[in-house]
Length: 191
Image (spheres, rainbow, N blue to C red):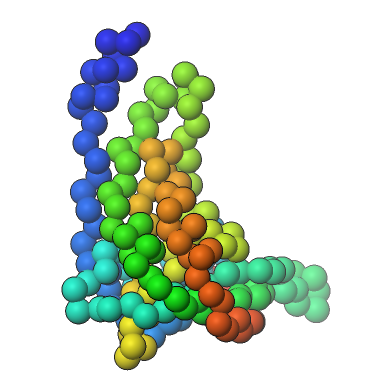
């Protein structure tokens, strides 16, 4: 058994580093595509948020904005049939020294776990690390430069596929300078 574990470890390679993140004109917390799993497909799949990736050389972040869905419910028509989903989204701006966060984001992801590890009591995250809950970085995290341009950084993943804790801890050390709540309604695709 030790030989098998050693052989598996020997052949593992960390995932390739992500390419540069797509630069957007600004932060968008109201694109339903930003909330994987929150809306039924194909609704969320018709939206194309900017791709995540590494911080490009021509972007120098000065702030962090997180988009946090805090409340959701179905909207019904007069007959009680669902016509869409309403979500309250908090747009939270964080400021401070981003050095630790940028260092955490530049880390390599761990090699992903093998399916056989579950047999030995190790857990595996099958959600692809999309832990979109308040205070946990995921695809709804933005880095903003002095010109207001924004990118969505790729969060390095642990062996189980979840986000590494260093980025979350670095964000927790920043100061919240603004919190704005927005209402977002997404109609059903068959409505």
